[in-house]
Image 1 (cartoon, rainbow, N blue to C red):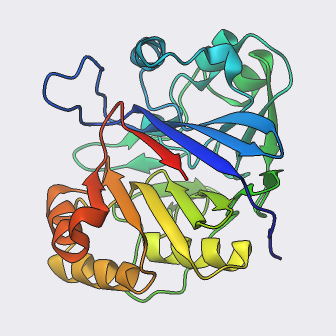
Image 2 (tube, rainbow, N blue to C red):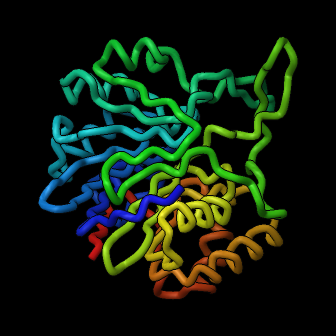
Length: 293
């Protein structure tokens, strides 16, 4: 399967992220949310990828950034974790329409928990369950397959895990048939834009599937070799220096024009990314805007 249609233009605004710049008026929070405007043949559509965990702060940032919630045409949830999904029903209510596409993996509503320092569910919370989303105006598109949102913009679907050094990045568990099992985070999906004369832009929430695996699948699905940009969280914050080094070197082989990584990427990984890519790397921050081309 290949999605070879291309966008004419792409605009990205970081509406929520863990960090804010010096003297920034924006509100930071642990999580991520990207507002993406895709344009093709005179048609513009706005996609909200993830909603972080505090909808009040997200909406405040939207107001300061001049983003009207009712301009959102679809929502993509990259995986179940609360710092990407909490408040999605509230955001849908603010959009104020019915039949708003909410795109995610079919396993997104499962129990997902940690045990250190104590047992705690970290997946989708009460108030944002399937019934809550549908009651608030969302129509769920739950699929393991890649899904074309519009020509030139599509999801990865479930990521094929092919690298030997990438893993989930945190000890997570679920319960299946009354048995506790490690959770491989198969619901971790990403968003891909294929931009005319530029190449692929990869949007990732936490990269639990591995940012190298994600980038490989993105380029394959787009049917192009050129990776223009990668933006999001890489979940290397608790990784060994060896994995960080292998990840960065593998990304170097894609020769991206730019990388913006933050949220769960971690300081050591950001340093390694900067040392490898220099001015092609920028730490992610709330309020950041990128236009392609």
